[in-house]
Image 1 (spheres, protein in one colour):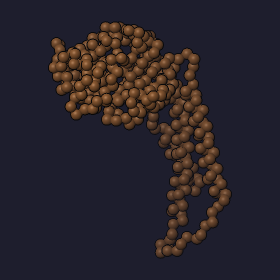
Image 2: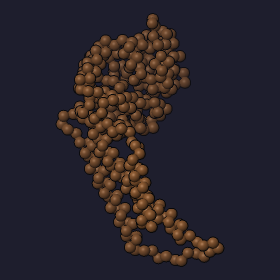
Image 3: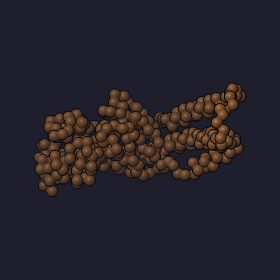
Image 4: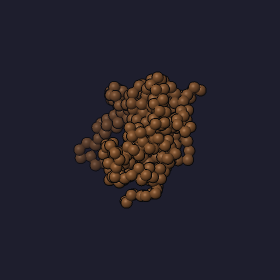
Length: 330
Ligand code: CUA
């Protein structure tokens, strides 16, 4: 029986290890997490195969012959077996707990030389603030797209403005809840260039499935160039930047044909803003409670866009929305 169990376990473990189950590993932390994942998975596969193999064998071997309606012979237990099947899981579970704890501590280790990025979740968008990067008006750089330099450890300080969200870049593995009123943390050192999805992994309402953004890992030089470009855009604004801002901040809740967005948590802007003047659009962005579109509720749209973005940025967004909905001169 044991031999059958071990053979099946070994076969399944090989299948489990050689199929690419996980997304690419793109951070130092990802490798640590993956090791834990695989160790636990292999233990589980072997245990499952032994138990299932022994059960299947016993059902076949000790089945009642045809016509046998007797009760089985009474069994009084087997102390030796009971000790074994209590001891083995106890050792396994304790070992896994200690190993996972050590791995998590390693993954969250923070070198003195690191960068901080604040992550804010709200229904239904992510906002990233770079406290060390100043833009027009002395405020910190705020974006809807996460851009980070490669091989630099980042401490993410995460919070929420409303319900619980969860910040996750699958390729980085580290995942952390965003909770209103507290700041949670996670540490990531990206090791691969490229663009990765930022996903909300906590069911947070109507727009949960669309609460996505991008994480772009770039070289140190590209990062510095990106920062300078963001500073220039914050200074100058304009409709082109407005389009980008819309895609990052507004598209997950609003339909707008020009931007190709399909969010349904808020009004369809092709209809709601058709022919609207700049003043109305600006008011709708910075003070969304002023006028609520029919069928929608007050307090759903964030009321702080006026503080988050510079005046040139907001004017660029208004200019873009006017153009996109046919209200302004093209
Ligand atoms: Cu935010 Cu799901």
